[in-house]
Length: 373
Ligand code: ATP
Ligand code: FE
Image 1: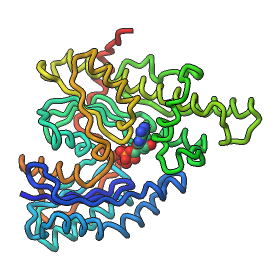
Image 2: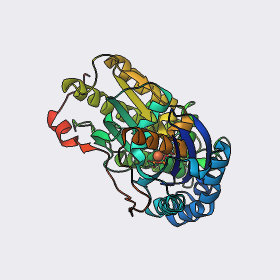
Image 3: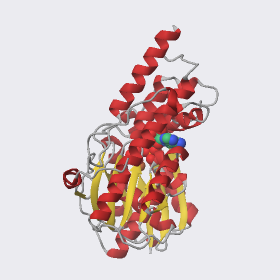
């Protein structure tokens, strides 16, 4: 069985062909990151145009590299939710035309489900497991109980951690920093933080008084911005030209993001244990999403998993960020179980907003689990 996966939910046009064991037969990825880095964020109409210009070539490339003809495919899997409407639309439109032309089953994919399941392509992880997904558009904690069976324990109430790091980096004009010209905001912060003193700016960890597993990063960004403004005023320099304490600000911001993520995850683990949601033998925490490539953040989550007896798994960076492979893999998993497979003529719509799984956030909050100090 062979599945073609197509991803266009944000700023990556990706396609891949996988066999049913998860072997990647061919893949292609066109990233728009450079363009968006120059314009200081994703402009949806630009993202749409770039997806439109690249999708045909990317899919062709993945097929050619795999040596698989469209007629040999068992199904086509495509991200249809959540994401940028204009971006999702291009992938869906292309896919629906493709499956009709070649008369193939269509498998609509939830982008976050795909991020959560990718680990199973690489490691023999069985359900249930806990997953923390942290990226430019999301942060969420969920128990993965099956291919299409998730319990949502927490999600971001405002912006996502990657978005916050990107905005801080932009406010500091890190793109002009000689070491950072080609790096994403998050990567730039990680690099500069290495030479910084995180204690110089003691930012408050968000939501310290709220005993749930949701996330908030907008307040932290505000704290960081205020500090930057204060330092700029003290040093008498123009906006975005701070030099002396950039490393310390990066280190403190990164540390606070890590601390917030670790605390929410710690509470989620305790909630799972109290409610028997994870297996008693070898319980696993899966970490993924673009922000998961940050080694400082990974270390913080390693410490939490070690103290709570969980085994931490994190796919390599190329599988943590958006790609066609994870969508094809999700298609393989759904095909195996016969879940959500549509005939080519069924019309479906994309959904820019789509929570993952059963919402348990109120139950988590009601449990009011205290963390050991
Ligand atoms: P989503 O998957 O939610 O749709 P996305 O496509 O923006 O969002 P990814 O491609 O998974 O997300 O990740 C991109 C984000 O990860 C960016 O915000 C980037 O700054 C952040 N990021 C990348 N590398 C690092 C790093 N080393 N440290 C921190 N953040 C990082
Ligand atoms: Fe993603």
